[in-house]
Amino acid sequence: MGRSDEAIATFEKVVSLQPNSALAHLNLGIALADHYDPQGALKEFFEAVRLDPGSPAARYNKGR
Image 1 (cartoon, helix red, strand yellow):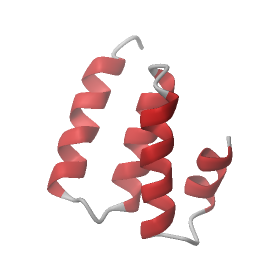
Image 2 (image 1 turned 90 degrees about the vertical axis):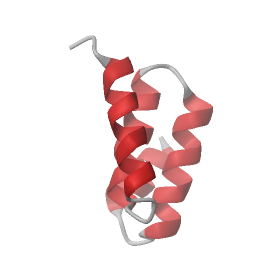
Image 3 (image 1 turned 180 degrees about the vertical axis):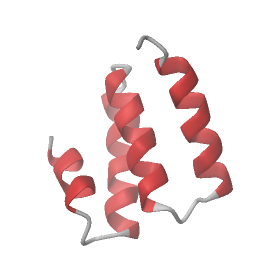
């Protein structure tokens, strides 16, 4: 939809409010990847996997 800056800002706020949420980190990572920030995305995917090692989505995106 062309609103990646808005998505990133929203997910960054969610992560700041819920730092232990693997899903929040995963969503921020996806938004960053869509915005061509692979290093930022990978950082968030690593955190999502750390918080929820059994998450297939977090592991998939980390490996991608």
